[in-house]
Image (cartoon, helix red, strand yellow):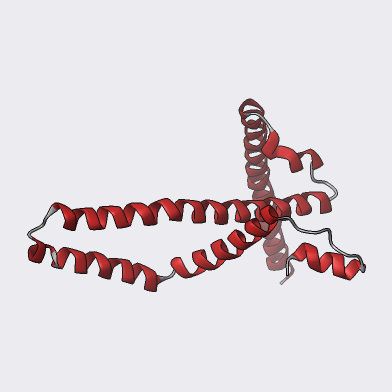
Length: 167
């Protein structure tokens, strides 16, 4: 059951009927999430290394023939081709989730610049300008931090001196 279906049920309404395209998308999302969880483990990596080692070890039995080489080339090409789609789907979903969380934080903080919620829609030039602004802000913050640390040191020294004088 998708999050949207749960929200409809909570509201007490019937969700709109889902067409074939939506169902295929949902199925691929579930498959991609599960596959990325499984395929990203150390055991799968060990399995891949084992397959390559077995393939390399069997080369002399097949006289290192074109068919023997074609086997690994075809297998790795197919796996790579399919993994591109799985990885892209997972990264797109993760990126959307992070953006939504950051958007929520920006909206929740009163002093935040709310127009930054749409920063991903800016042109490259606008992004460069914004980056320069943040570098200036960062530099000012570093300078201010240095001054604050100097003031804190001075206050601590004055407090130590006052404490030593009162003894």
